[in-house]
Image (cartoon, rainbow, N blue to C red; front, side, top):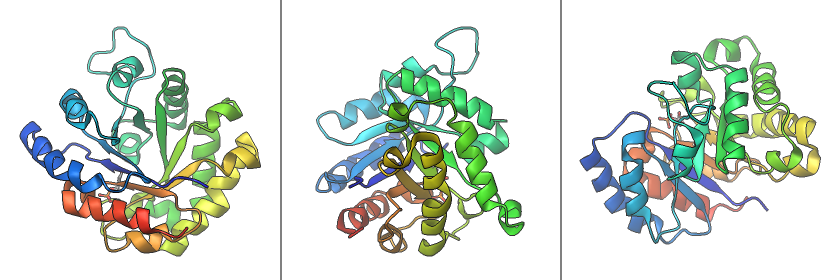
Length: 255
Ligand SMILES: O=C(CO)COP(=O)(O)O
C-alpha cells in the first residue's frame, strides 16, 4: 500500500511575512491528516524560517531545486548538503526548470544521484508539452524522461524516489488532466518505465503524484485512481484552506 503524498510547490511566490501567515493557518489545518504524507516547498530564503515553524509537526519540507555538486565556485547555486540541512525532499526536473533554465534529462540524472547520496528524497518531475501531447508523443517523452533521468540507479535507490507526472499543458492553466488520462499515463507509462529500470516489485512501491491545476474540487476524483498516489500542487498550495482541502481529499480517498 502506497501512502498518499501531497506536496505544495510554492514556486517563486510570497514574501517572508506572507509565508509566515500562510503557515500559521496551514499547520493546524493539516494536523488532523497525519496518515497522508504532506510537505511544503518554499523558496530558498524561507527554508530556515519554515523549518522552525514546522518543528514539532510531522509536516515535511522540500526545496524546489539544487545543484548536483557538493560545493565550489557555482555562484547563485545551492548544494545538496545545504538543502539537506533543512529539508527532507527536493523537487528536481520541474518543467519550468527544463524550459527556462536549460535543465535536461542528463542534469536531472546528476541531481537525482546527488540528492539520493545526500539522503534527500527527490520528487522527480516529468511531463509532456502541449505540442508533444498533440503530436501523440506523451508516452515517448515521459518514457525518455524517466529512463534517462533515472538511469544508473540501483533498485534500492529507486525505492526512495517520488515521481510527479506534470503535463506541461496542465500547469497553471486551470485545465487539469482528467483523472482517467492521468491514471492512464501513471499506469501505462510511468510505472512500466520504473519497472523497466528497477523491476516490477520496486516500481509497485514508488509513489507517483499528479501535478497540474490540482484543486480541492478535482482532487477527490484524481485520488480515487489506483495509480495516483498524491499530488504536487502549485497555485492551490498558496491558500491554506484550498491546500488543506486537497490533503483532506487524499486522506479520504479509497484508492
Ligand atoms: O507545477 C505545478 C506543481 O509543481 C503545478 O502547478 P499548478 O498547480 O499551479 O498548475
